[in-house]
Image (cartoon, rainbow, N blue to C red; front, side, top):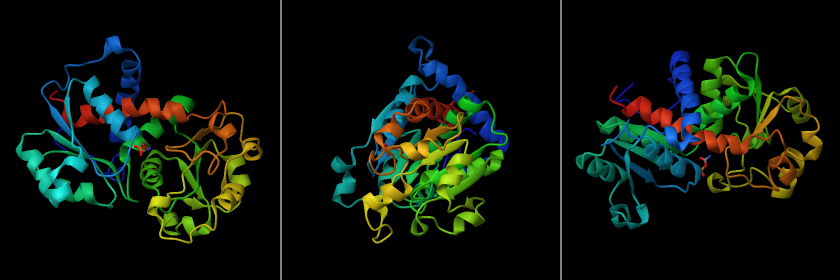
Length: 305
Ligand code: CP
C-alpha cells in the first residue's frame, strides 16, 4: 500500500482491513512497552500534521504514532501559517510537498478536502476527519477495540446511538463493519438519523431500549453542535432524557456488551457520568488503541519494506 492515500474505509477490502487490524494489534503491545518501539521503521521520513479543525485524540495520537516509528513531525500551526494570509489549503499542501514532506495528515471541516488534496498531490494524504464525511482511522481503532473484546466480528450487533447525521465516525465504521459482516443498527432523534443510512447497509431502529438490550456494542455519538444548522433537537436536557445512556439504560445491556464513544464526550448529555465510568465502558481503551491503529496506517503507507 506504500504511496497510497488513506481517505476512507469504503474502499478497503476484507483482506486489507484484516491486515491493518493485525498490524494494529501488534503495535498495541509495542506502544504500551516503550522498550519495544521500532523507532527506525520510518527514520528519515517527515510527516506534516495539517489540522484545520480542533482535535485532541487524533492529532496527539498521530504525532505519538509517528514518533514511535522514528518519523519526524511538522505540526503546521495554521493560525500562524500563510493560510491566515489567505493562502488556500491546496497551495499550502503543495508548498509542504515541495519541501519533500513524505505525507500529510489532514483534518478539515469540509467533507472531501483530504480527497481533493490527494487528487492533486503525489504524496500520500491521510484523512484525520473531514466534515460529516469520514474518519477512517477512528473506525480502525474502534474495530481493534471490538476485536480485542470479542476475538472475532462474527455475529456481532453494533448499535450507533445519537447524532448520526453529522457523524463521520458512524459513516467510516458502517462501511468497514459491513465489509466485516457486522450487523449495524442506528438510532436517535429522527432529525439526526438520515434515511440514506439504510441504503448504506444500516438498520434504522426506533425502540432504543430494545436495541440497547440486543446489542453487543453500544456506540454513543456526541451531538455535534458545531455542525448543526438549527432545530434538529429542541434542547440538550430533552435529548439527554430521551436518547442518553443513563443507569436505567445501562441496566438493559447484556452482561458481555460494551460501551464505546469516540470522544470528546459531553458527559451529562449523551451519557451520564456513571455510564462513562461503567466497568464495561471501553472509551479509554479506544484512546489507547488510537496510537497503535495510527502506527499501523503510517507503517502501511510509508514503510520501505
Ligand atoms: N475522536 C476524535 O476524533 O477526537 P478528536 O476530535 O479529539 O481528535
